[in-house]
Image (cartoon, rainbow, N blue to C red; front, side, top):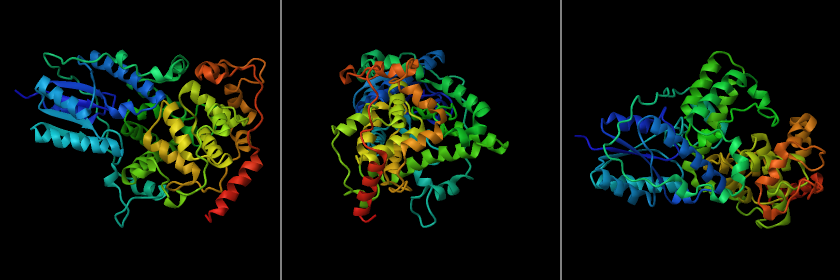
Length: 471
């Protein structure tokens, strides 16, 4: 009799196009899906941890419908897996690979220890189109610029997504499981949970539905509409890709079919999927991108680093007096997400107009975004700050006022999220005051603030600092 298989789940919370699940089922033995709340989960910020809990609840229900279960355990990954092997008699553990340095170190130790104990231990690609070690320049190094990276991979064959197994064999006796509610995944979100919940598109079915809607209704105009934050012009799949509720291969093939069928915006969207890949390749090959300036010459740039600086506090609270910046920050508190054009604006404003370190923004987003992704977040912040790979040059200082006029004509986006000054503000603008901590003491009846830094003054100061460093 073949011993059971443990399916160790992480950021692959789906049943379709799941190579580790397919391999586990193919062993012909009972499969025991397990999620471990280890130190890497402890380290996740408030909003993404809460959103992860929603995804786990959805997957647990899908597994129940498939005649299986999701076993939840809390503790060190290796020790927990060893305990489950002893409890269940499992002969194999399968999982999907991760690419950040902490996860790589953990997974190597787990694989080595399990194999030493005679347990089959195998990892699989479920999160990327092209794994980092499979793409390199002609001289054998990593790509440091996106456009050559895109050219190198755009015509590569991507395996077609595979269907969910028709059945997931269950063990006669299930091991004990923690109760998800006991983990209190949303505790740090406090009252923001109720505000944010309606804006989450949770789980595999929701992700597949959104993909179908996007391909059929918004992809053709994606090249233009994606820059206008008041339009529903993007895929909106970032949260689902983050938790693996849909595979990037599924997205790629849907986009490629549209591209081959002549849909105008398809190639632009495919390039965005590869931009995500580029972030993961940078994180894998140059892991310092997560914690330090990717370009070493930026290590000594004179950013201010005080998290409690009045300008930083104003930025965090969406009270800078700059409507595009404030609207974007408030969108994040209400929905857990932020439009990509808006992310560029708030990032540029923090690092250039306010001359504050990109790490302040990177950490804040890691706590506040429900679609937080370690690679994309770090690369995005360093891109806009000028310190990263293929970065926006530091002297490119976005003007939030002209950007608002260009990409939010009529200021519909700003009015959606900023209540102050409106006689009848929309519900979403008022929701901001219910989402943020009461300790901030904010009210929609308060006057809208004057800009903390004038546009011209902030730009001039940024360019002066840039010139003084000899960049």
